[in-house]
Image (cartoon, rainbow, N blue to C red; front, side, top):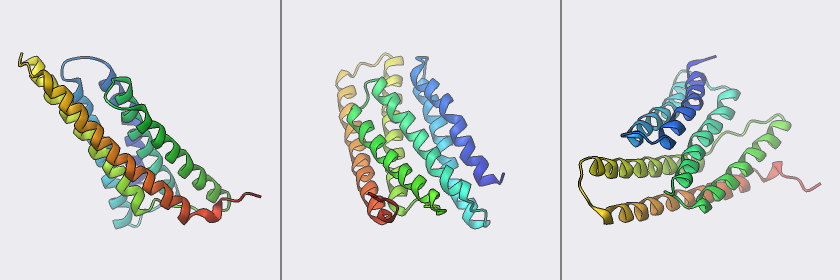
Length: 192
């Protein structure tokens, strides 16, 4: 297994640790979650660059890299819903898009084709990761203020709204990339 594929697998392995850091309440758990999410996100940045630069692009990588992204992002979004930091409609839209895209990839694979992610899928993933990181940073700020004894009750509401706006922006890119992907790969969908 080459280095880019190992980085992709590392991203998947980091997910349970990220989820635990998100959902287990201990001092500065959002900071730990952010560190894990950041490390996992960096593997996404490096695996593709290394694969292209060194000529290590594989069918496994083309298929598993987007799956690893989906596992990481969906885990974060589901944790946000569990913690009351996000609307579940965002997760439903993202799940619908991801199942649709994965289904098209499976249909293409049945015909011996590997459909790699397009630029819109990459934009979607980047906007989702930026939104998730921003929400985590806002939670860290609130946690630091709480631990220091500072009382800024209105800030939680402002951060919640800001987080929702960022998550909805990423959801718009999620929908847009899904529609583009569907149109570009309609040849794999047959009603017969």
